[in-house]
Image (tube, rainbow, N blue to C red; front, side):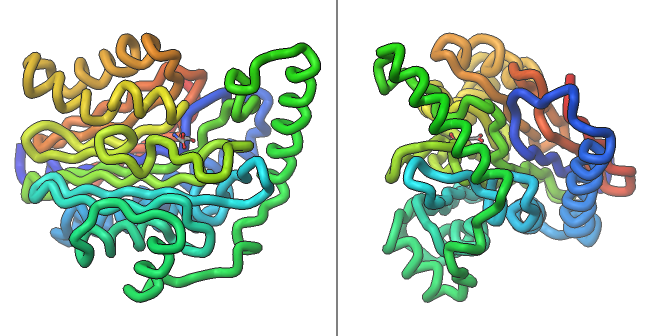
Length: 318
Ligand code: ASP
C-alpha cells in the first residue's frame, strides 16, 4: 500500500437507539454533517498533515455542529447545566491531553490539545481546566451558548422518567441516566501518510448526569487511546461501562498481547468485553497500516470513513 493510500480518517457522532422513524430530511442532514467533517479531516491528511491535526480539526467541526452531543450540542446535567469533557492522544509520542467538567470552553478538544502540548499534566478539570484553556488562547463562551431546545426536551424526558421509576421504589443508582439512549459523543481517529495515528473524543456526557460526573470520554484508555504500535481508538456509549472495561486500551492490548487483527480486537471488545459489564455503544479504530474498524452493539452509530482521494462514506444504522 502506498503512503497516500493508508492515510484515512474515521469519525463517530455517537451510538445508541436511532429511531427508524427519523425523517429522510433529518437523516440526510446527519449524513451531510458527517461528510463535511470527513472532508475537513481528509484535507489535512491529503496535504501531508499529521493524524493529530486531522482528528483535532474533525472533532472541532463536530463540536460546532448542534446535532451532536459535544460542544454546542452538549446534553444537560441533572441541574440543567452543561459539563463538557474531551481528550486527545498522539500515537507516536504517546503524549495525551484531556479536560473534564468545563462549562465555558467553546471547543473542549482545542483545550485538550493545549494540555497535550503545553502542560506537564494529562487531565485538568473544572475551574483549573478553564483557567488553563483561557491562558492558552481558548475561546470562552457564555454557558447559554450550549443551550439547545432539543437537548433541554431530552432532559425533561429523563427527569420525568426518573420520577416515575422512583414511584416504583427503584434504587436511585439504577435509574437510567438517559432513557433516550442516544449517545451523541463525537470522536475521530486517523492514520496519516507517515503511518502515525491519533485519536480524539469530545462529549457533553450523558443527559441527567450528576454534577461532577466524569465519563469515559476524557479518560485515556477508556474513551480515547492511540499508539502507533497498535491502534487509535475513540469510543461512545455508556461511559461507566467503558471505564470499567478500559475499552479503548483493550483494543490495542488484544492486538499486542493476543495477536488479534484490528477488526477482531475491536469486535471482541464490543461483543464480549463490554456486554460483560452491561456496556452499550460503539467505537472507531484505525491502525498504522490504515485498516479501519467501526463496531457497535447498539441499533446504530453515526459514523463515517474517508481515505485520501476517495469520496467519504457515511452510515447511521447497521
Ligand atoms: N460515553 C459518553 C459518556 O459516558 C456518552 C456518549 O458516548 O454519548 O460521557
